[in-house]
Length: 180
Image 1: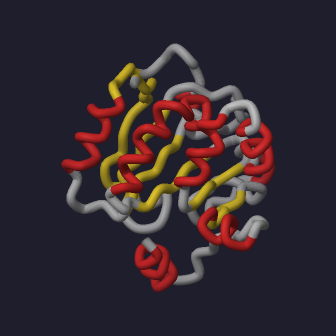
Image 2: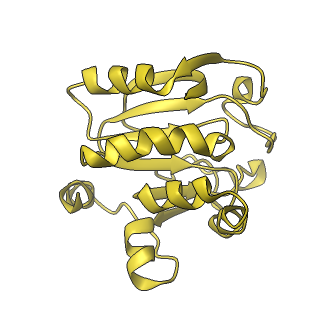
């Protein structure tokens, strides 16, 4: 199965807890003013890559605490990302996913596209909502504007309601890693 990829960051500390391998997906329909990745918006851009090719590159990385799917919007490529996420979760790899859609919008979309629901079921942290320039805040962890939420999907599934994930200290990052 193929993915349309905008790029990679193999050791990021700003895209989720710990050191992350970040897969930037190509294609976004949100076109948020002030987006820091406008080059990822075109649905035709980027490079087409096989899921296995991406997986092999992730597996070569020895210094990562998890993998992050960013964008563009990853949920526009839910089917191939689901294939990749299933393998990553079998290897107990922590998964953070960014989306310009809200969690509630993704749940609604999942009623028509099961891959979206399944990808959410494998995600540990979801960073949801569009970037809003007027709410930009550089002091926020792992997100660009204050409307965006860090949703702990593991706890959300347990509680049956949205549970937010917060970073208040380095020890919390360790706790998240130990949940795996």
